[in-house]
Length: 474
Length: 126
View 1 (cartoon, one colour):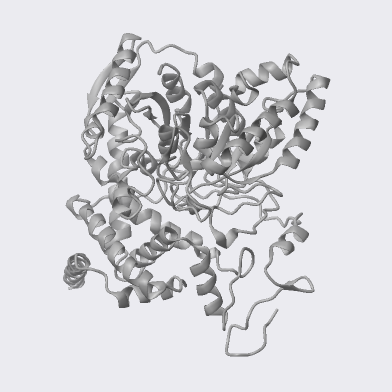
View 2 (view 1 turned 120 degrees about the vertical axis):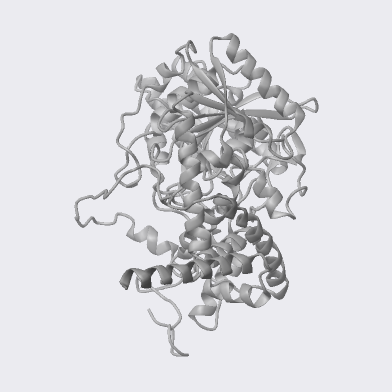
């Protein structure tokens, strides 16, 4: 087995027992990136020199027996997350030259604990998309089939982990951006509860939805990374002070007495692929054999989650992206006056979908339309939240497919925004409710495309959903 | 008298909102797209104006399905943590990245950011 193919726990063991060095491990990942990135386009920036320098420092620590949890473990970061001294574009040309002077809190934590930053992953610009075709640096290809999409918006991160270019990745999930590409590429991806992980230093998309989470090869690796990044941060006032449990212990507990809810609406959406449905139903039967109680439940507002999302998210986007105007940082276009400078910088620096969302949000928030759109969507959001609260008094977790279908062809849905929006139909409700949800590989279609299974839990129950995920065998 | 007035006013607000909802089922015009693009400070080409008018109309009609849901008396959700009034000490901190932040600026003059004049055709200001 090549070093870059190891999981985090295998690499930790190998590094500590001196079977190989952090420099060798990092070099193996860099070689894989060199070999495959031209085809996959999973990285926008690779920081080879910095990575090898940090790996050499990690090796010194390992020799001294002072290894920290992630010492010498190479990882990659979605380009919409700030990394000190390493270009962070958000996959939009308006930030083509932006080099943040600081790390996002989650990145600071990982680097302090010894993680080696390899580079920045391609994504849909500022997270706007479900296929990674909205990047201004080109689409990401699915490592399983180069004619298919990697999913989005964190397509580069999922593809990089799936293709063994890194041991894990840090990405961002506003309405499914970690889980859906993880499902398409056959890796593990988790959206934590809103408030569990700090968002300081991520490029904001929709502040009341945005979360930061890992993409890993195994559930055990997910627990390792979550242990490092979870917790309150004084720089993000939305983080909660509840104690972070020991996830490595949590995931090893058994399933006895666990009540698993199966919401029927998630299996009846338009376009549900028969193979996907069969794979998930078989996995639910397996859980029953392992001691879980299966309960059929109903979440009747599921079908409205995408409509809620596409009012509230563009509204928040239109406000959040107001800061990008070419004045203080990023790429400035010429203009005859200040207004012209703003309008040209934003015209040249944003791709079509980002412009569309800003325009929708500007419209929905403008005088006279606020109640009809924004307030109405916020009210339906409340009902979606209450729906989950009701169900979680009867069951401990909910199991559904992550996506109604496996990865689709490049260009297949890109001309119709609604079709692409609906790709997130099963991942968006958890985002509205702020609850944690994980996607774990559950099998493959006959044509070899990965299928992801989604487990949702009540707020701050990351440990529980990871435990159930740990019992899903491919 | 006062109560009657408010009920009357509410009726008008209701009719106004209903009218808005009904009108949005129609498509967004190029002029409306131009207006919101100006508010959003994004210059659009004529082809983009046309595309956005079409696709945004489709999106608005799609999100109008929310009107099927009865939300009378439902509180809107703006956040999901339940946290309130999160404060910190109001203390000044020295920014450790002054040099790096200045390096990000598109145009500087003697450590100051340079931008075109806000009013009229006067010289660039700093």
